[in-house]
Image (tube, rainbow, N blue to C red):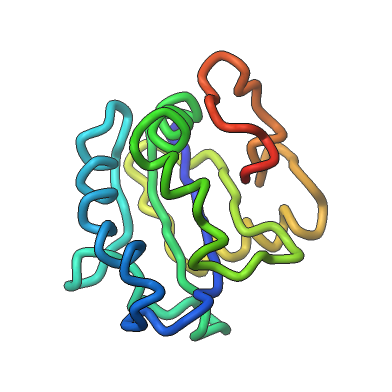
Length: 154
């Protein structure tokens, strides 16, 4: 089994606005870092090299990030113990805080590439039922051994 993750959000400004520049200018860098990280398997991307221009089913204003990793530890290390953590901590500079979950993880069979529709269904499960074996957040796993950021940051 592998681990899929979806992260969604609403940009505070259009992606070509100067206030989004720090985020947009570092997407290629963060994506390349993810791809070089131990445990990385796959990430959704368009011809642009990122996913900011891929429409989320039912919500064209939402930006998404969908990827597959070997396990929670690999994903967690990338998110919280690399340069990515500095950008993660500044997320509210570029994204509107959401009142519902914006991040979900779930297990997928080896070789399975999740679709964005599948991922949004998992996010809906998390929103409706909280963390379960089928759809879970960081609260569902023991992150104490590798999580550097405060739990409140996410």
